[in-house]
Image 1: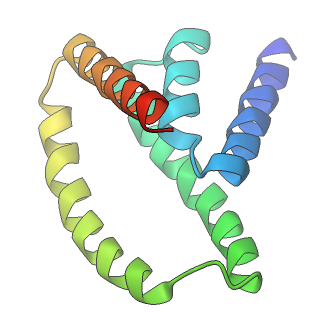
Image 2: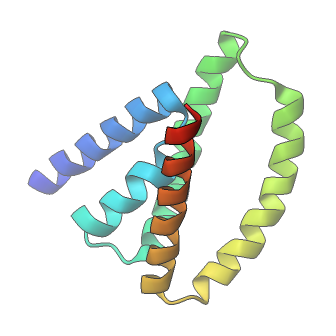
Length: 119
């Protein structure tokens, strides 16, 4: 029961932050899956991507009705993103989970510092 409650709270946090800032999948779910649910990094990434599909679909639909989606940008960026994710997910599968986790932490740190000083 506690595990289900934790999953619901993580999902709620991810959804709220996704709706507010457009983040949640990687920044909230992966750390929660790895540290709270003790998931291996590779599984956390795959699970996060699957959750993002559902979350993003509902968020995009809501934003579409408010005319906040530029579908031309969605089309072009999505095409490029598909190529990128197919290539890099294969690379990530060949990497050690610990190294992957450290690279992810460095990425989050660099983005946070950049955003902090540019705000």
